[in-house]
Length: 174
Image (cartoon, rainbow, N blue to C red; front, side):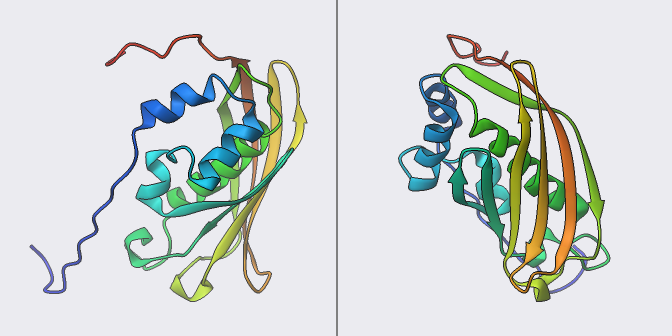
């Protein structure tokens, strides 16, 4: 094993099947609020990366992340995939906050513009997502990643597919 200062991180999460089942019985904004408030488990990706859903209103959400060294790429900055995941969550949940009971979404495409490197020095960053248009079959959203001092680190736009959620969860292993 290279290096003498090895670190370790333990990640725990709630049952994602419980959260997915609840999604079928709630309007999008209520579902998001239940996760934020701790009534429902958050998805495992939030525990893995360390994001927190902090603000929710119809068509707008905010996630925060405190950059840590386990987010780093080989050159000592937060990996672009972490930033893209944070922005994808913000755009997707902004759209989800507009959806009625029985409707869901998935990302069709996301475009991220990285404007400056994110490091530990950035402190707490916020991804604010806004739904620009949410229709019956498609939606468009944008997100901005900013620091507490207002520094803009990245922006994203996303197109999302909107669909009816299945009445029953997929079979295990499907």
